[in-house]
Image (spheres, rainbow, N blue to C red):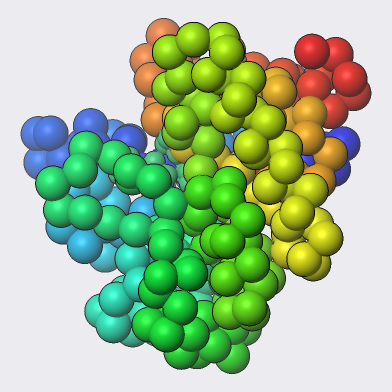
Length: 247
Ligand SMILES: CC(=O)[C@@H](O)[C@H](O)COP(=O)(O)O
Ligand SMILES: NCC(=O)COP(=O)(O)O
């Protein structure tokens, strides 16, 4: 951990490139090793129900070889809970999934899905897994996360990153700042992620109550041009600058 904020590197889209051709290259588990050497604080991998990027075998190999904490992103389904309970990763982040979406649209409806989520959060927590809920920066969802007994929330930064004007981006940032403060007052550890880039990371990393950012797609894209270690080190440097007040 550096300056109080951790960088979790999401390796999903290394698997997207591999799966475009089949076979084994590029290997997301090798990417996790490279990320470890480059100073990542954790590795995130999302086993989608349709297995479009990360596959079961990747999770098995990560659990065997990884020296960093694994943040296992998963839908709140019986199948995924079974996989999580078998592997017991450091953390499970419950995310919403739609078959037809290109990427994770919006946050988990922790309030609307309270009764469904309650036993899942309980069972994962009872197995010693740190449960996180990937939610929108919204007071109702934060309250539901706290009432569910999840120790962690991850705020979806997609709307902030995709904002089409500076006014809209400022409004989205304000929502995240307010939610991060609310999370702290509810006793929740606060993470954030989705769509973050060199251009958008600093205002989010500067929020003092955010303990972790999970970043993947942009880093994998940058790796094409300058290598994965350089991309990770570049992101790490921006996060550290933001934390030190250099915006
Ligand atoms: C939940 C989330 O934000 C990530 O898992 C991530 O964006 C990579 O997976 P997808 O792009 O498949 O949503
Ligand atoms: N939970 C967000 C994540 O792991 C990374 O999202 P992205 O940077 O790949 O969009």
